[in-house]
Length: 156
Image: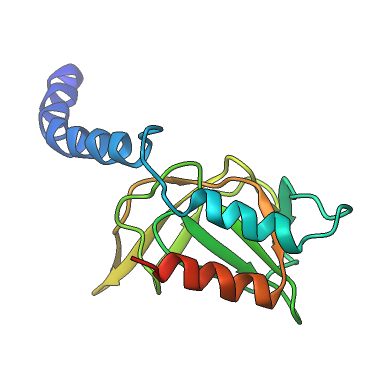
């Protein structure tokens, strides 16, 4: 009898599972063209000093909020002028500014290759708004660098 229940339950899941696979494959396409990528790298290199290297991980105590710049860049804001730009591994379908981010953390650090999704609250439950987003390395940025990056991302 139990096997029939399992079979019945499985019949309900193929469509949502197929949609999830489509979203994930769209979000993780490595061939996405990123026109602003090289210019952003130039901004990061131009104003950085030689002793500042990208960080692989940030402690959850180092930042207070995370802001989405676009579907490829997020900023982790710490106290004072401490900020880190994270260029995601690939474009993240559905990721928008002002999104609420739900990170999949296993320790008190957020690291390169960790993942998150954008969610919104609808009535009493959370609804997924984006594909799975995968973090890259954390680049310390100054307020002036961040402003230049924001201007670059707004360019047509």
